Image 1 (tube, rainbow, N blue to C red):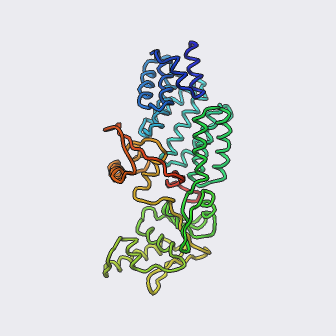
Image 2: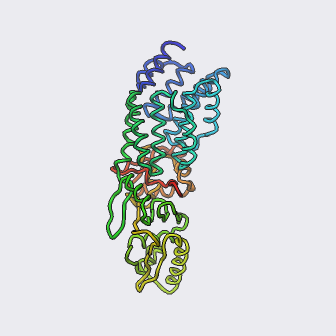
Image 3: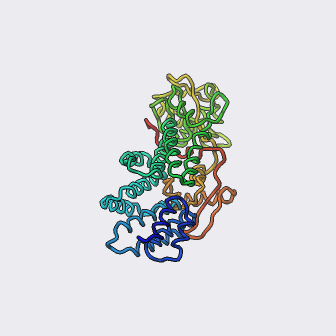
Length: 406
């Protein structure tokens, strides 16, 4: 490897893409193409970066397995940054095994972290945590240690474990400072804001207020009966009843929880659950059926009793009932939560992350675009959607993820 390639590589490690391009911009050999691709990725031109990495991978000969594997890992990182979640994960896994077999443990660990970050992004938290535990942190350079701890913090945040998240972010900050890469330090600072931004709203006794991550964690661990509107569950400590797939029952449970210790008139329940603007005997009969189903679903936690005007929630042992709601609630909130990370998303990537059909996601994006809340650029498969982050809110906490005991 010649001196210009070495100098360009060192510039990239130090976070200086312009310095790297000054050394290899006019060269078309495989190593120069790869370094140019990384430099363009650092500068934000992800499409050009992806094309350069593919050219570099093709240019390396069959005997240069390590170099080709590194190009595949770099292309996977670019795909993750551009939210191309459909990028073939199998190719990344093969590249990682190639690097491990040739003794390149650092880049193999980098490939593993990319895989984990993708899993976390699409909500597969358990699998991400399992793979993260297999990574040996000790031999990693400071930059990769910072990435490792950022991923650990992301998992802890999605599980609402504030103490673990705070410790991981402190380690990530120290490693990023040691690495001396400004963009990495900025990423750690952005992740740290999740701990000081409202994570949910608490609704109870006719009042509501914003909660930080640690406050949400405390309420979930308390003896209170919590109607969790972020995840569609009703829980007390580790006893959890999921109503995520039963929206009518959850709407009734939430209305009863917000009114506790009072009751809710039947007309209000009909409006909350069915959107009924007027009532007749068929509506009242359906309400009785759904209340019976809710009573059966919550039998381990509470009873639903009839009152003169409507119905009331009566917890078995909990001293109080509260509702946890997202800090911002509106139509298509889950789509906005993903877009609020500041990255550009395709509708296919959002579909994969949300577990919904692409057509459903496209309709949501069109509706949000008409309201001026999102905007797109590009056409066809290259079309991407963006929106500014919601200021002051920990938007990743709007995304549902399994909690301990779920």
